[in-house]
Image (cartoon, rainbow, N blue to C red; front, top):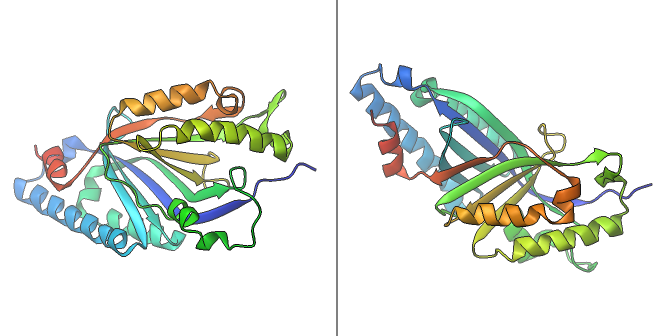
Length: 250
């Protein structure tokens, strides 16, 4: 029997992508638009309280292209908290002028493919492990998100490989990612049983070209070249209060 990978699991994650109904938004009065934007900003400030308390984190970015206008990525301790925040957003005035375009539900994950030597230490008490399972999302200029799967087909079935072979392949794959330390921050979240793909990958960078360089280099690694299947890619720019007001001003 093939040995399944074991995972350490951290915060639950919701990527909520929205498109703006510009035609409807432009029909309401300037006063109504201003009130809706102010209410939205208060909601974002409330979300940020968890960032300050280290009980969650979030990222808010515009999206380039026609797939969405913005994404709110939220990390919380429970799935219930994610749903409460999602429902609270849906009750905002601004929500009436947004169209859900894509969402992704997952949990921050660290697998034993990349784990070190066996130890009696509780991994959840290891500061390095905790920083990866409960990450503080950076406020870097750009975001890139994509879901992915491992292939299950004749001649390239990831799930039929022995554990030792998968570990060695992932070790090599991980070395590429580590070579971009300081340039790209990567959050891997598992979504088996939660969403349509198996993992969600979220990247942050100050230089948007680092996404292209990292992903292109990884394409030539065997883990990606032979065993990876990718979903849609979303890329965007950070949104602060000033940029949000500018975005929604008509």
